[in-house]
Length: 294
Image 1 (tube, rainbow, N blue to C red):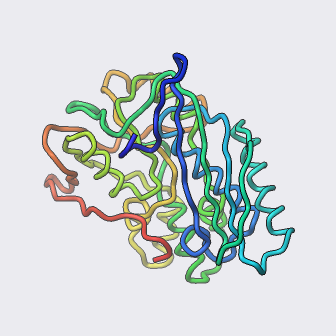
Image 2 (cartoon, rainbow, N blue to C red):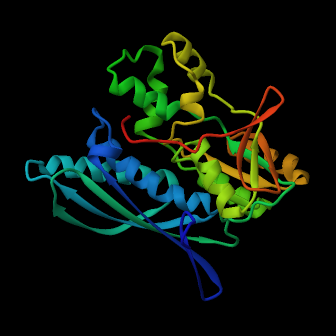
């Protein structure tokens, strides 16, 4: 419902999960994004909300706005990207609409099903705080692209930005495995930690930030702080979640089966807000995250 990644309806004994997203060329598709990548990203971003709820995507619809200067081939390439992503995630594109707009605008709606849903309000004191995999590649890719830096060995950063992945299998594992809350990391770890803490009415203590090794190298090479990408960057679409400590081994094992890792990054306590445990001291974590094309 309101405040979660998607809405949940019980229909005929089944939980149906619905979500909608809108992407604008000026804020969601950085320069050099191809039409096919736009289509891919639109589908992935839309179903990522279902993944965060632990749902299996079933079908999506899209409304596409194109400027009057756009050619038919551009629309075909956007559709190709959607089809490619739909095939990867086993979801059907079942309809849509087309209209004229000042820029490329893609609005997607998706429906999925779940046996148990994950919400943002379920974290409890005593839970562990964790993420799937590592953060920072997409925001580093955006930094690289918007500053026209040479790609070199950092092609993986651009791919993470332009062709993200939805953690659908991971979300289902977390939901069935007993996780207590979850959210996707579209807005960055720091901001999404705050959202989870506020919705659950608890205090989150951040103990470590798992940064992708490629980000470490990229940051050193360009004289940057890797935490700007892994903590305050966004567009990663990994999952941030909480769970009781006794489930750790089971969840780690199940996530490994689908090629993902579980990294415990902190704990949940009584209280409010988010603090960062650094050098033995607890300091407030800034409530900031992904800003489009900054």
